[in-house]
Image (cartoon, rainbow, N blue to C red; front, side, top):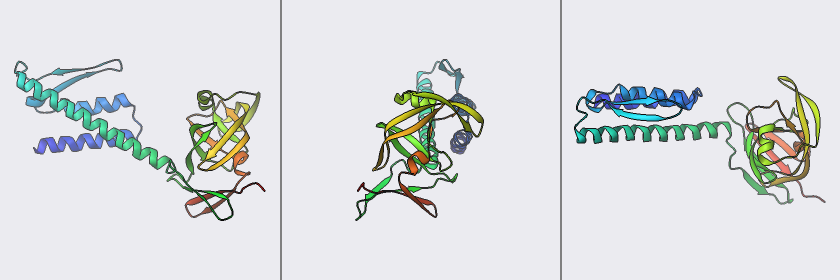
Length: 235
């Protein structure tokens, strides 16, 4: 019993470390199943793993005993399910830590202004889930960006048109960019139409920088770790 508890805690620890350090998925499986392979002979399940396929092989000395084979498969299946659940749990934790505004709060005040309240993440940024032309995207508010900057991979995914070519200056130097126009850009109940943006080929990841091309058309105020966006009705 002590051995099984210790083994479970070890697998839990390895799963946490792998996720926190962004170790590739195949390495996570290899490391976790290595511990399963080290279990006592009565319950030992060896695992041959490659990127192409995963196969199980009973390594018990009593391999001909059908009851022990079944017990071995059940133990292996339980470990795999447990590791999968832990991976899902920690991935959600990391996503929430990076973007605490996946479900934003919106309100309308007495003046008819639409208000959205955003929380700052641990890195000091304001990430929020919004939409471009009705497609869900993740924004990071950036007052240092003159326009909305969209990674090329995101632009291709949501079908944005490249209207003209230019060059932009990024933290990594100059990069080729393409001007485009967005039909709608939304954060909560705040929505802007016909907004210019840049498709930047040098940007990695799938986070869109929500620059001053959007922010200058609304009001924003920071209080402690909260950013309040307000859009007033047109007169």
